[in-house]
Amino acid sequence: MSYVALSGLSAAQLDLNTTSNNIANANTFGFKESRAEFGDVYSNSLFTHAKTTPGQGVQAAQVAQQFHEGSSIYTNNPMDLRISGTGFFAVAKDKLTPTSNELTRNGAFHLNKDNYMVTANDEFLLGYQVNPDTGDVLSYEPSPINIPKEFGKPKQTSNIEVGVNLPAGGDLKDPTLFDYSDPETYNRSTSSTIYDSMGQSYKMTTYYLKDQTQANTWQTYYTVTDSAGEKPLNIVGGDATAPTGHVGHTMRFNNDGTLASLNNGQNIVSEQLGAGANPIDLNGADITQTLSFGLDSATQFAAPFELTKFDEDGATTGFLTKVDFDENGSVLGTYSNGEAITLGRVGMVRVANEQGLDKKGGTQWDSTQMSGAKIWGESNKGSFGTINSGTLEQSNIDMTQELVDLISAQRNFQANSRSLEVHNQTQQNILQIR
Image (cartoon, rainbow, N blue to C red; front, side):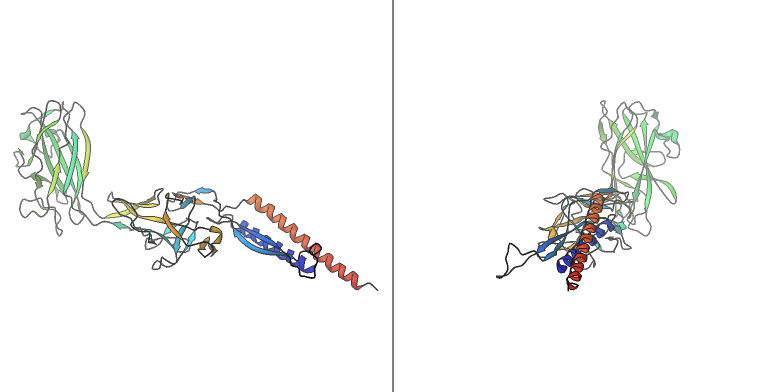
């Protein structure tokens, strides 16, 4: 009888410990509650009567983890990730050996000094490389996710496409009086930024004036501003020439406001910009790079002046300004040069039998023969869940149920203690019989 009571005490203690551990981790992100499971101990032999043989007590079968989902907590940090549905994040202690990794549901990540996404224990979040153009995963071979602080080499501006509506009722101007420093000599102006091969930026301004000498005709002229001030940009073969020698475009429109003709497709040239770099050559001699300025989308409708399109291909070096994640787990980096780049995709892992995972602590698990091999995939595909940014999965602890279990385990312990006490008292009574 004493051994039965002792096994009951041991089981009740294990139950108390398990419940206490659950309560202690109620606020641990991604924690999964444990449940102590027991089995009875029974044995007999050829010389025992099965109908009258009592059991020999209780034994712990296992402490099983329950993998149902916890509730969400919303944060303002885009690197806080939650998996809604099946799957785990994969993290590696060594970025050079990503194949040695463990699984977790705790999605509280941050950037380390080298801009790798890591856990609170400095373990590296694993993901996949993607095609930068299509965003498709290139291979399910995991590697640490790195978010570069800088992106892209400087790109010299080569092409600018502009769409603009020039008002049909605009004031007429004398083209012989055009002076970009005098606002009275033109109707409107627009500005854009262009770059040389070193990423140095310059302000480029386009001036529009409605020609009073020709119906439905507008003249356009260009200037650039650098550290030396504003200076004219001339068009090779342009057909609009100011008295100062400033050469621009002539745009003629049909009566319905559509563009009839434009001396376009020529290159803007003038002084060289970007000393010490491979310059935007804006001088007719030794042209190494040219700047094409397209106005094919221009219109002349009875509407206010409006810029309807602006596309250019130049860029300076970009510095990281923002990180986002979409529902597919794609890592989206936004940079100061206007580039928005898909940098990679968060990897996801599942196993055939979650109950067979080996607990490693720190809300992490590893695969075993009982769980089956790791199956790699990505968010929102197949049987994998969806990754949500700016939210974390809380522990799946039900505090009310845990307190009830705690009371039950305590009573169990007390009952087995009483049983042991009664057994001891009975023995004492037997020994005192004379």
